[in-house]
Image 1 (cartoon, rainbow, N blue to C red):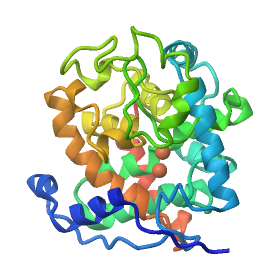
Image 2: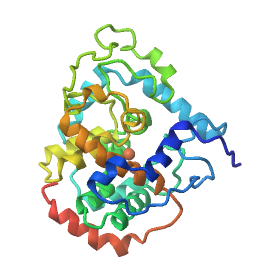
Image 3: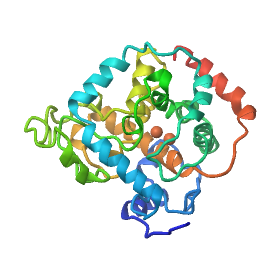
Image 4: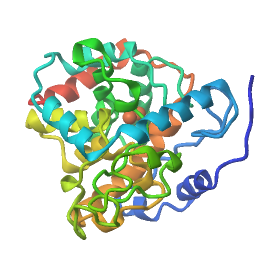
Length: 301
Ligand SMILES: [Fe+2]
Ligand SMILES: [Fe+2]
C-alpha cells in the first residue's frame, strides 16, 4: 500500500537549498542533480510519520536507539571496535559483503546495499567529475554497517544504523523521535544534560562522542589505517547520519573552523546519499575498475 503524506518542513529546506546553494557555490558549481519527489516505495523521503508497518518498525527502532545510546555505551563500543581485530578484507570485498545487511532504520531503501553505494558514488561522479575523493567517499561511507554481521560482532540494528547525535551533552529536540530519550540514563544526568555537557565551545566535533553506529566505526577504520583521504571525506563518513547538525543546524556551537569548512561538503554529499536511492540499477562490474583505481590511490586504507 502506498501512503502519501505531507512533505515535512525540513524537506522543503533541502529542496530550497538545491535552488540557492550559497555554500556549495563557494566550492564548485552544482552539477544539476535532479531531486526526485518520492522514494522507491512511492513515499516522501525520510517520511518517518507515515502509518505503515515499516514506519512503525522505524519508530520502534528509534525507541531502542535513544534508550540505549549513552556515554557509557559509546565508550565501550569505541574501545572495543578501535582494536580492529575482527576481519581483514579489501574495500571491494566489503562492498559485496554489505549486501547481507538490511537497514531497518531507512524508510527509503529496498535495494541491496551495494546498489546504494554505487548509486551515490556514480551520481556524485557525474556531477563532480574532478572530485575523485568524493566518489570514493560515496562508495565507502556505509561500509561500517558490517558491524551488524556476526563476523563483526553482530550488533543490533539500533547500534549500527539510523540518525546519529552527540552523547555527553543535551539531546537536541530536533533529533527524530526525541521523546524516547527520556528513557536514556544520561537524560537526567546533570553532567550530560546541559547545552555543553562535557564539551566546550568550538571544541571541534573530533572531540565529541557520537552515538555508536556504522558512521563512527568506518571513521575509526579509516583513521587507524592511516588513510590519505582528505579531512572532508572523514567528516562526511563520521557525520553523514548526523541530521540534527547537517539538516537542522543544531550543535554548531561545538564546531571548530575546520568543521565549518567540511560541513559544506557534507551538505553536498548528503543530497546524493539521500536522493540517489532509486530503482535505477548500476552495473557493478562495469564501474568496478574505476573504483579499484581510486582504492589503489588511497591504498593505505
Ligand atoms: Fe550511512
Ligand atoms: Fe548511505
